[in-house]
Length: 142
Image (cartoon, rainbow, N blue to C red; front, side, top):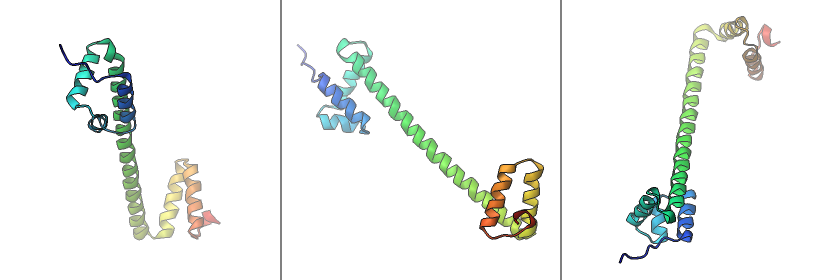
């Protein structure tokens, strides 16, 4: 006769709570005093449709999917932030290069003319505000 299972609804709920709280499967099994093989057995039995484990195994899979999605979202957010930072540095470097090459007055005059010709009035307004804040004077900033 096989040994009775350690699984109970309380153990299952505690495992889910630990997983949802950010613990890994390994940490959660160690905290509950169950083996990793036991966990795999419970999940296998649930996926095979055994009534005691089926709903619980589905919830474990759902929590795992949510955690994966959270990790992917965090990775994407870091990537976007780094990408925006690199783009900003690149834009500033181009600005500095052309300001040095043309001189500030010619650079900003060309920049404002380029924005106005394309109807980019919001960017035009922000550029004027930036120049005023820096104390730069042109006919456009008076």
